[in-house]
Image 1 (cartoon, rainbow, N blue to C red):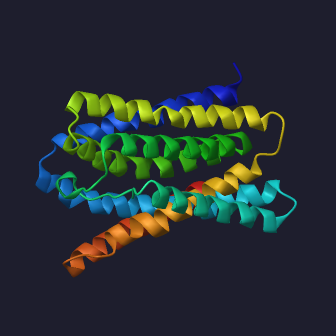
Image 2: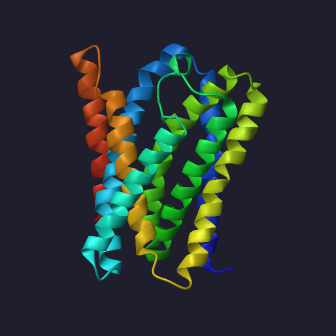
Length: 244
């Protein structure tokens, strides 16, 4: 098997396993979960921005002859995820499970499956361009998925699923991520996949700017604000360091 394809499959399946790991966090004491969830979300926001600006965009621009078309695909990626949130009436909320308000389970699973498919396409494409950049982008995406899966699992239990079924269905919906990665690999054998990398950058920018940052910028105490800001900067800096 081609080394790149094997790498894409391994990291794709690892991303799917995060759905199970995220579900297990629901068993933590609620006080602990509330204390650490927002700093983790802030770190994920910084990592996603770092992944978009320091890894995905430079590679997309380097692989394309037209910068304006790269930016067009970034805008398309941003808009597609905005539309996904609007049309499915679902927001990637990262509140603690007791505060989490979601539609019925099936709608959540469909939205999560589509989100993971598009994410897999983007990460798979950047693996084709540069494996090290693909790993960095994967880490940024994984940091976003962990708190999301905690919330999704809590929402599904709230919707009436047993804990076992919630974990199983969450894992099944996450399998669309490696599917998207494999599709990106197949497409990349016959054409330039810079547009998928740019699409993924738009995805990262939307999630970080429109989804995660609003979740963490409101805090009751100045100390909480400072801690979240430090985690945000740390997430972005680590992706910058990885790019070097």
